[in-house]
Length: 168
Image 1 (tube, one colour):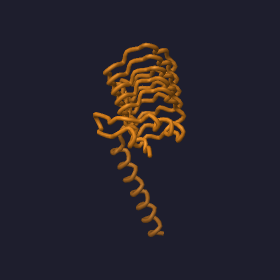
Image 2 (cartoon, helix red, strand yellow):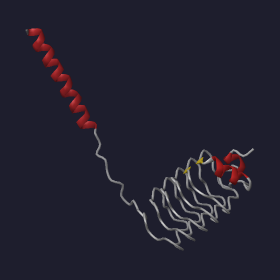
Image 3 (tube, one colour):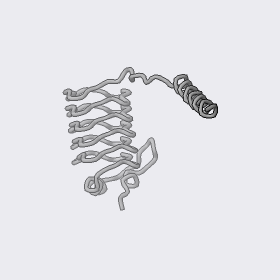
Image 4 (tube, rainbow, N blue to C red):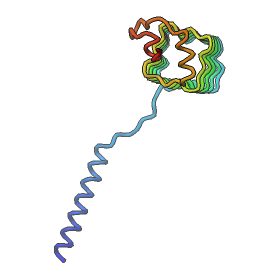
């Protein structure tokens, strides 16, 4: 009986120490301050040039002719966005979610899309000179279309557009 009580006491002591360790080492989760959400908004002709927009959400936003030239859009979310003829020249979209986005006629010259997700997105007549798509997730059909007009080297990363797309 004494052994059973010692085991129960030992188990309670171990669980109590584990609980204390978790309680004293736990850090509260804080909501991200300064998070901007442009979801479902009309941003047509808006000037965001040279702006830090990292982590900003643009879900289903209308961004025709918007100017994002030189902007930091790292880890931003542009899902279902419309960027027809938008200017993203020199913009950094590293790690961005650009899923189901229309980029027809957009200026993507020297933009950086490294590790971005570009699935189901369209780039018809977009200027991709010097654009870096290294490790980006892009539909095969779009890659084949992009490779037909891929040229230039990104001035920031030093990677050629053709190499970043894996063109043959």
